[in-house]
Structures are given as C-alpha cells and as structure tokens.
Image 1: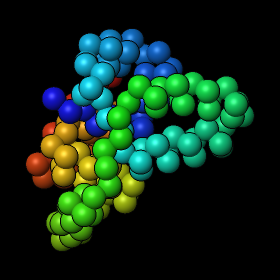
Image 2: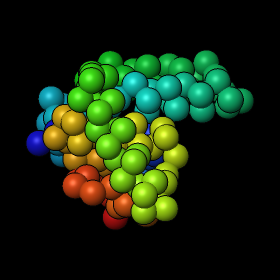
Image 3: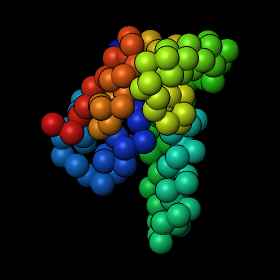
Image 4: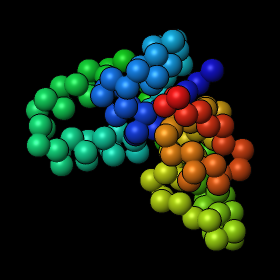
Length: 132
C-alpha cells in the first residue's frame, strides 16, 4: 500500500508523537511517499522557524528515507477535476491541499493527514489519520 504523507504527518513524526511514530515505523519504507508540494510547505516552515539549521538537518535526513511521487499530467488533470467539483459544490479547499490530494488520487495512494475535515470533501480520496 502506498502512503502519501501530508505535511502535518511528517511534522508530527519528527516531533515524536507516539501514535504517528508507531504507525509510520510499522509501514514498509518502500510504501512511504511525499509530493513536492509537501516538501515545499515543510521548507517554508523550516525557513520561517527560529532553528533553521537544526530543522534542515532533521528534515533532510527524513527526506532521504522517503520517495517522492512524480508530478505528472495525471496529477494536474486530477487537480482540475477535483477543484471544479469542489467549486461547484461551494466546498473549495486550499490549492496546496488539493495538489497533495491530487497526487494521492492519481498515484492510488492513501493520504495520511491530521486534516480530515478538508480532505474528506474530495470524492474518492482514501484518508488515514495516525494521530490516534
């Protein structure tokens, strides 16, 4: 099973939240993925923090152990389809979250996030929340 880790899941893992650590470490390394949108959000958080060098080291070490899903035409098409659907329903979410969800949908991955409320609006998206 492919697990696409949302930004908050990576942060919770590195903060040492027990339920997230336990879940992530019980998965196979080959099943753990990120998308570049998540990586960009994490780098934003790092460079906005007061401990840039400390955080860079921790996150870069984590990134080395996780694969990145490619940004493809299928992801872009999924984004356009999902955004139009949500717009028609008056249920839009932030574009970054929609891009992350589109990666999960296009690559048939389960999105692991603590933000079930927003992501649950996206039809067909498989979600797991490892916070417990």
